[in-house]
Image (tube, rainbow, N blue to C red):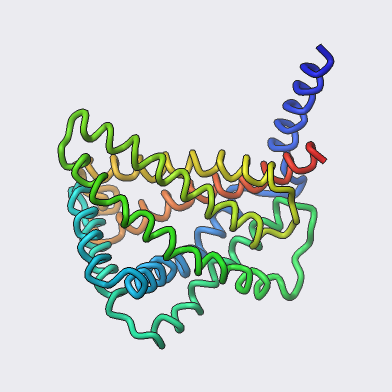
Length: 274
């Protein structure tokens, strides 16, 4: 009975601390701020992953698997076509171009570190930006490995998506778990390396898994959203591109809310377990 009460107290403590992250914190503001940093660094990060993945596994393999995967996705909007263009451009990059991409890509790491600071009791320093950028380099190195793991599963998952019906349902289940595992590793690396506080492995892994499960759901929800036959610019006077940018920004904002709360959860779990 005593152990049960202790567990209940810990759950209440975690819930209370998670709900009151920091007296001066504005989760919506810092999620929007991280989304701004992502607008600068996310596409270069994806291009780095594709370019380096092509160097490791072969450009033809990455191109073929990417075409197979994107061909299995709904094509009601222009997102798959834009991703194809990005893959083609990435695989055509030279080594100097790949190195130059590090400049905008590491900006994303600065955004993570600044937003994570708001979830802890640390204060920003003059070197906060550069610390975040340098700490993000291992994440950039991890990106092509995660990409190649996805590429390796495409011949199995893409046909399930194209089959429809129960095959589609099975494809979603399989791809969700693959994405969940990869995101758990990536988020654990981001929280542990880019984050501002050193944490024990168990709370870090648990918080990363919790955040990864929700983010994986967001990603698959976006695939479902692609299948809706409506114009993304319908609410913006049908101006070309405006709706797509706004929808993607809102989607990224939601993802970043989950990622930031996940980091706060890791901090709280680490404090409770110590």
